[in-house]
Length: 192
Image 1 (spheres, rainbow, N blue to C red):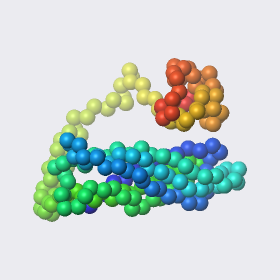
Image 2: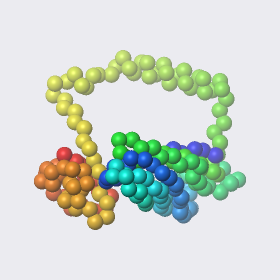
Image 3: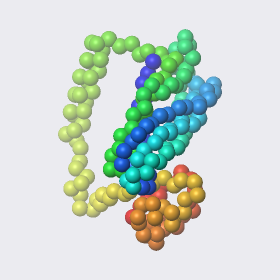
Image 4: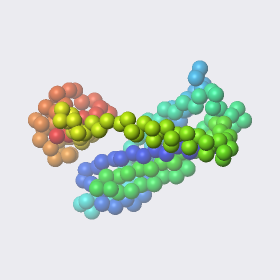
């Protein structure tokens, strides 16, 4: 059995003040492919929260899952399945941070001895130490400019106007930053 951790951040308007409840369930279908078994389908996240205005709001979000278990990693004893073991939610700066722990069953257990692990770890650390001396500091280069962006994923029926209003930004700047491209659901947009 293997463990997968998924972290996802959701932004809501108005912002979240307090999380009341959060749960997730999956509706995955399993398909045999040449490479192995593919688990594909939606994972539904639902719950309730109190927004900044004091109103109770519902959460209805969908995560699209697509997980491939390669043939050489399948155990053959147990069918490959994914199941949600734990769902945690935290409020951070008015956004929801979702943490999902998913158990993958039907995979081979990798057997290594403590001696092998210690040797591998020692070799890796020695290699990393050698490579560190060769790193070049790219941030000292006067020609290098580093920039960070705030980005948002478009929802169904989103327009430049609705996104600008939701994130309190200027519509014309939003259009300029994104080269006035067509907005489709799940497209990534840069916020000014």
